[in-house]
Length: 264
Image (cartoon, rainbow, N blue to C red; front, side, top):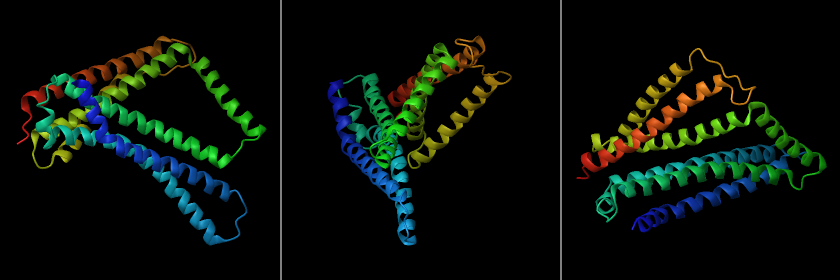
């Protein structure tokens, strides 16, 4: 039954997500074509102005579509669990953990797709603007990837893995915190649920930022030696803090939706 619930949640968002992907990639190709046009010596000022304006709109479209993918998945969580649909969702023959896990996976999908879509779209825009790269451009691209490898060697593989783990855990924790804020907003009020969720999110986020700042006070970030103790001493407490916040957010959300939620 969990697979059916997850499939139902995915079907609810796939159409809009697909449309956002189509708009973003189309804007990327259009923006790349406009960039190639701007490389030429355009004599007409109106054409130049319209081209710059169209390019600006395309870039904004890429950013908005990427952000909309994340917003859509969170809005689906709110709509499917805290509006009239919640009567059906919370009475399905699945456990409460499975119910929340399905929504969490859809939110992860939206966030990953949004970030990937922006990266892919900007890459398509640049490639469309470049056309078929010549030898110099190819060498520049290869030199960029080589510099990334040199940077990893300079920072150290251990520090790189630690930073990657922190980014992943922090992103998941942030997502759970947003879902918890939506849940609290739905529990504490009936009319202004979205405003309450925003207020709760910023309140908790400010408290977390204060704690992270206190942890990092008086420390430095030496990145020249792989696995250097100062860097690990800075990152590990922050990583553990994100992990604790994520776990507490999930279980508090589980408690509120199971004991305190009133859909009437």
